[in-house]
Length: 490
Image 1 (cartoon, rainbow, N blue to C red):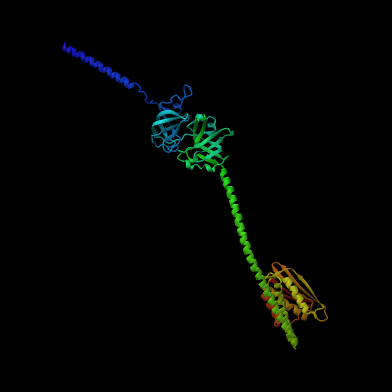
Image 2 (cartoon, helix red, strand yellow):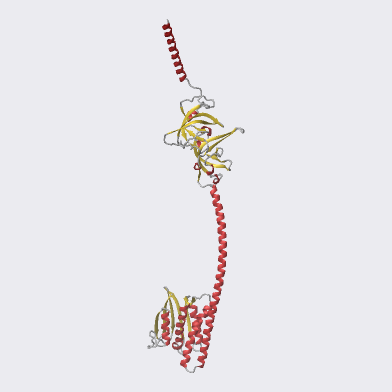
């Protein structure tokens, strides 16, 4: 009896154990309240509104979401985890006040947390973040021309496009722009740079002006002002490179204009100072030149006067001489001195001291000699065929002495007392040379006249003067007259 009772008790214990095991198995398979769904959703699946009630189906629930990061962590918020992930259809903000994660744009993430709305914008308050080991791939931005038509549809997604700056605010409290997109001025969206942005101080909005065209890249977001019942859609650039000017910024034109104005003032001031300095230096140089001219004129005037005194002394000597040969020698010396004095007289009357007009000088010289022999030359006709020629002073002196010898010799030997004489002085320029001729209509030179080897003083002087002038000398003589031709270098 006892054994039978024990056997019944054992069977009852076994039955209880089996029931407990079955109960534990059932409990272990039953979902725990608040435990996350093991399914991994895409961003667009997690934000879906399948029942069409205007609310996200998974709002307030813990889920796992996979997507690609479109911004580095600690860019939009320097202290907390704040990135955006998206797929081809939707985007969402990933936020945590406690988690730390090294996330780069293009990383593939699996995020676990609760979907909530922050100022009517969906975000996932994150418990865990896993960076999937795969190549980085930044999603292609949506066209801004498409986004501007329905920004709400593209919240949390990358966008890129071109807009024209219509307003800007570069103050320390709020930094941003308003840009118009497309052809309609009513299609406006803001570019927003928050105070928690890691690169807030590197955005150089000051260079932009109203009307500048920019290319903007960034994440689509929005503000909801509940007190004013107003929604503002905006684009959040990730780095300063996300704002690029198209063409030349208007600010640069202002800088160029102001720079040009300042440069103009500088140039005008510099020219004014320079002109003042030039006027001062010019005045000094003019005074120095004037003093030099006065000094040179005084020198030539004194030389001419001294030569005139010597000529006057020779007149006294000629008057006191009692021999015709002495008188003739002294008269020839006087004539030569007068030819040199005439040069200094010309230089005294002009401001050019390196060159003189050879044609004018020869005409005055021959006229002076003519006046000297006036009592013997009443029946002599003097003709001039002179072209304007400038000659150096030194060579003009030599040329004058040579002409003096030729003219004096012509008056002495070419014209008889009862014959009508004709004297012609020619000066021409031809092919880089100066041709000087002295002609008379006398009986010609005697056969024993040794002009080229000259033993007489006159002929020796003429030959010497021609050599000093580096002149080619030619003598043509016949019964109809004699012509001396000298070819000089111009």
